[in-house]
Length: 472
Ligand code: AMP
Ligand code: ZN
Image (tube, rainbow, N blue to C red; front, side, top):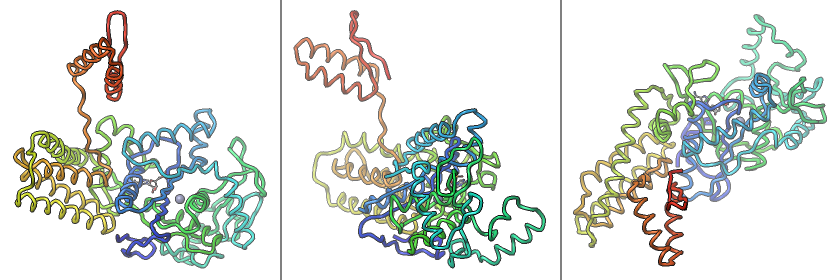
């Protein structure tokens, strides 16, 4: 598979470091509010990368953090008059619900920054010992100029950065920065302010800097070297550049082999963001569309391209997705009435064509996760089955076509199993059968019917007036 590596600005063949195992680290959200569709883009895109690697037979260790100590969380806690951990715990729960509804798989590990403080302190100690960090008045800074590769990911030149800052500083005096040796130095540990969450450390009570969290959590749950490090393109500088500096200075090995960054989700040509106020939360969108439509919409563009969000575009994604789901539903019905016989020669050729669609789909995914082309291939396959598979077809061919569409949708995390809602008349017929089974002392069958109904959300209640039921 070829992956576009932000480090080399080229597509490179993906080769994992440890045989069949792939370690992926995706920077996760800061949990102080509901997530918006822009935040959902990296979640969906890199979940799809994970699913494709699993499909190819890799063993994937997928780690994505929750930043649960941060200025925004503290601000929100003060506004509501509750503790920071109440805010972060609340929104971790809400983010997890949104992820589930977007069919994003749970990470192998979802570390929380506040639970990894001792390891963060350890890394800071190592950096100080090696001369890469220093403490002033309870704040520990990373000595940026001590790391020779600084700027290699974002292609920024350290002297240009310094010059840019001098111009800026000429106009506005940045407070509290004078204690730093150099303006490029960034915070690893900051001292406690009144009312803020804090932890003891050799430099006094305080809390870690944001960049440090990811360096420490990826080391702990993946190792010193990560195969793929991913996030939105706004994280390239300074977040990922600083992660590289910290990790490579501390561990003396290359931090990540491949850097993947998704493009922005935009609205009226501007990045969707909390600060601009031009955002839609996943929770609100979910009231209007099944969230599977949002997943499909996001995947219908290449992950590195900017993607504009509008009602019209989501509406059109909805219609497209329905075309696929309708084809699946038609094939399911066709399967019930199709012919129990061997494949004809002509059908064997059709079966061969099904395999060609799979190859084409894989080629698209192998080309830097081109989900847009992969989806086009699914449409071609849908068209092919609509015109070639009928009630006259051999059952095994219908099943093969159905499995093929299902399998490809599954790689994209698109759910094709449509649970048909059980009709009232079917429920009542089953209840009657259960009563008959009980009368005949066939309790096994009676229990089986109760379980079948329960699995579909139908709850039975035995009352004196007979059996009552309701939908859960
Ligand atoms: P944050 O909580 O702001 O750090 O964002 C969490 C993730 O969402 C990061 O990977 C960001 O790069 C990503 N992100 C935020 N806004 C957008 C957007 N409008 N489009 C795409 N990705 C975004
Ligand atoms: Zn990060």
